[in-house]
Image 1 (tube, rainbow, N blue to C red):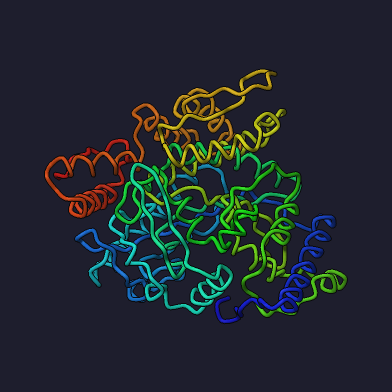
Image 2 (tube, helix red, strand yellow):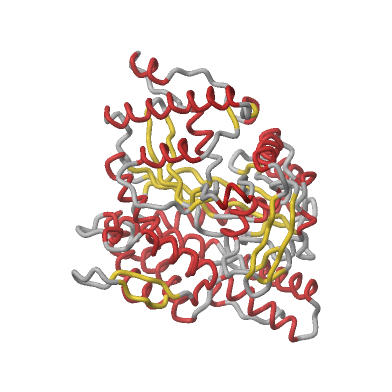
Length: 500
């Protein structure tokens, strides 16, 4: 895809042409949805993890090209920054021993990649934001050597017309002006894909939006931004600001940011793609001249490359995905909420909780999104990002009441959502032993009030209390994190001392 990308056209006539091409794609998608030609899902899920590179000293390494050359596998690819990689796991059917199978594949792949990275004095780190990253580590010279990243950076900067302002006030405040989008590369995530029929898409997407806050509450793992202690899950505010192409005066007028939670529940996938066209100017073009309606008239399936490319530059936390595989179209919900790490076991536990919960909530006769205002779901997401496992959330009361309870995230998860996730995994046909093992990890985090973010913060403050300065404490904590990450013991079992 990278070789074909061309710049978006910012003159009025060029923008009109691009929007006309996108409108054609949207019309083609509408026809496809009406024709019911989509693949029948085979309970397929997919998994991608963005990774960091660090040295034995815990500091970032800007060398993904060298590491990828050593790894020599198409499963591993570049990401935006030279300190990043991404690993893609082939789609699996949600059934049987899939959770243990995924765990074994991830451990094997990451262990191999780590061995290869060590050949060039680097290590693989699964973490939401590498605590030792400094703002100066992420300038335009640190973007990966790929024309698509350079082009995206140029177009986003041109659209904004001034530096990107990073201003995050959490336990400490951090401000920084960046002349490029490279700070986005600090944010590394787990992306969970779920293939669904068009008729089930809205239920799956609404359910995913409703549970985004509890995903963050139990899975937060990004408490530091460029050496400063910020939100418990700092990726969302950092990603939003690092990709915010709105000049401040346009933002003040209510224009939506390209990193977006959304503003309403939906009834179809089409609504999300239509919003993307209505609210967000295109940044890039594939140069493809496909006429989707003609392809459909001739009995074919359009690739809708322009639509897919535009969709990829709008960073919804639950993103709709259109794709064509072996000549058959399909839809996916791409869940982008979770940070990477801390361990493979923790990643699979987060995935089990998500897939089980989405299945159960999507099949409820009185869905949660009919009782939970969307504004409350958005406020929950913000609260979970700020406070992590200590967050207090709004959730509908049981029964027929239309009112909301304010309850701690850990109580909500333990008393209501974990049983729902278990029943959802049963509906998928997941092996009960795997179900209990991985949901048990989520339960123990809630019992102990510990996730990756709380462990990082506690260990850092213990290092400070032991006499280390800020930079030394962050580096020591990061080194200890890396050592414990390789044991694959879930994070709630980790000691907070720096020995061992």
